[in-house]
Image 1 (spheres, rainbow, N blue to C red):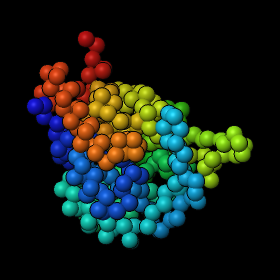
Image 2 (image 1 turned 30 degrees about the vertical axis):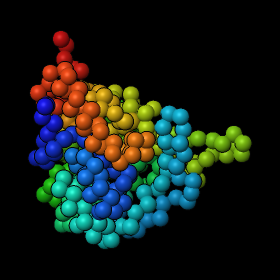
Image 3 (image 1 turned 180 degrees about the vertical axis):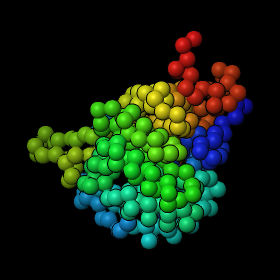
Image 4 (image 1 turned 60 degrees about the vertical axis):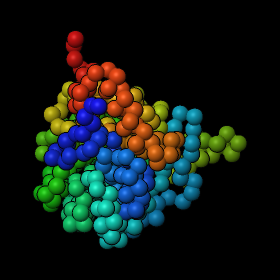
Length: 304
């Protein structure tokens, strides 16, 4: 059977399938459940400096092509969440702490507390498309991206990944900023800015009006972004966006991702999706004669 283990910036994963931030990462026990379901690593919900209620309902709408959400980064704040991280340590897989904030100093402080509580790595949310003064509002400026990555790198001793936004003219600009600031990896992509309108009422469905689209519709966008990043920067890439099956994951790996994250698929296929996608990747590698998952990373760039 093919070797499914991967290594990213010193983190050893038993397989390349990770939980994406924002799904099932509210508590330490839910992160443990995802690991038990087969994930090779888990990413927490994005955590800020203070408790945040998020937007009023409705915050989620399902469409034929995917799901639009505008939750508003609801979270209990880092002081309360450190207890969840201590529970998550029982997962026996790397736990990556997702961080958002209004400034490089705020994000550095949260990242440091995440490390103290046991996080194996930090994922900087520079890409949430529907929150004000954080997320993509910072991540759309490559200079700010570089400044945040550099500051957080100085505040922790664990790998720092930056989750960058596709809602820009050229996603490579932010990736170059991450690489030039000694970031340890890039996570691409976050949701794509979108909205839905109810014809009967003539009003936007979400209370925040604008949200982020996830699910099957954005997979081709994510694969394209990873493909472009692989040709432009020499740092590990973690692909995310619309992965429901093992073959979806393989598209990202062949585009150049070393690992993938799954979010919306937990809604479509249940928490068992993590183990199933791992099995599907393994079955494909065996069928086509690959000895390890690393053998397919970036092969879509080969000329022959």
